[in-house]
Image (cartoon, rainbow, N blue to C red; front, side):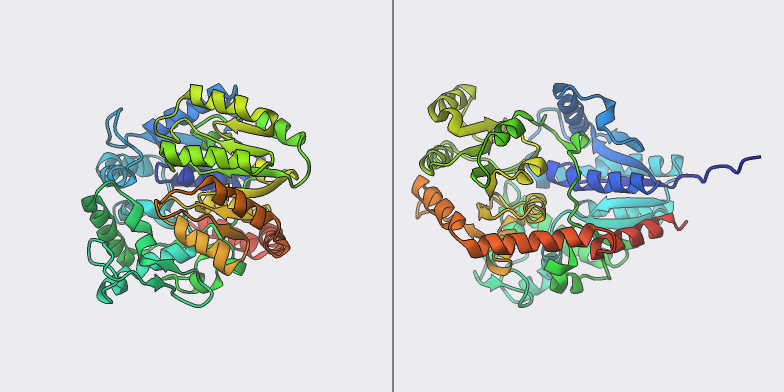
Length: 458
């Protein structure tokens, strides 16, 4: 009689309901499935509908969803027309909407391990009620995480008050090889629609500090060669498994359908000629900033690929975009969403004008692409400091006294970036180290195997 096949270990994965959080946790889920796990991936109802609509619009069937990943969706506690770009309000309603349902699911599915986005720290409470083991996953840099744990010290030193408002605008740097950031650019100062929500975010971070060390594991989407000092400051020894960059597009994690015409267009461009411009899933421009950016892309005189998602700018419509497309002709391509990892790996791409979200930062690093940094909010200013000050793989794009980035600034910085051989060399060196970390025997690959072995322990 043949021996029974070993029972698959079931892991539940819970991202914060935003594009930049869903993507890396989906990639981690794919890797866990490749190691024999079954994954229950928890989206909100709202985001799951967006993913399914995106797959349908891209004419992709269930094959786009990795076998072994089971989608579960739960309410997010917001009405159908609520503003989900207010991430603080969104986050505040999630525990009441999801906790009891998650507890039921964990018990019903005999889940032993729960991989929780650190932005969903409240879910760690389920360890006490269900016995599930919890691994916290950092969707941002280790440096940001350590900065969060230092919030009480920043308050004590009088740099910020208990609402997160800046009292002394000093530059904050926790150790010499870590990035520095101005107090006015700390992550929580640009998140939330009002002071009350920012205060709530700050107080939540202070409260969470006590629980970090109680997690069974802390997992980081970074690699040791670039964040060794920040990683050493974490509350417990982390498992460092990044960069989590998919070998191919992970369609089931995207809220908008990818426009694959961008790849065929790139095929027709000269090597290292294209300026790629993308600002992630949350950045919003007003019409003045949008027009300066559009004029700047024309002024640089190089081919460009520009991602303008449906909610990227207030006050523009498809007519404005059609007019701009006619204006630039074949010199530029405007798409609503791009297969970014495939774009960044394309030989025709010369540089990346980016908001410096951590996913985009890791993807740019992994593919050796120089950056022009244009941060919008949250951790992006500190990521900019990594890129420009620590790694030396990019330049800042600077606003004028009105807070506007002019078309001349865009033209000049593109020319400066692409004329700097040192930046190109350092970007390629960083790429080499990133690639070495994830191959067999690399530091991140070894930590991934440690994580896999930990999850197999019942």
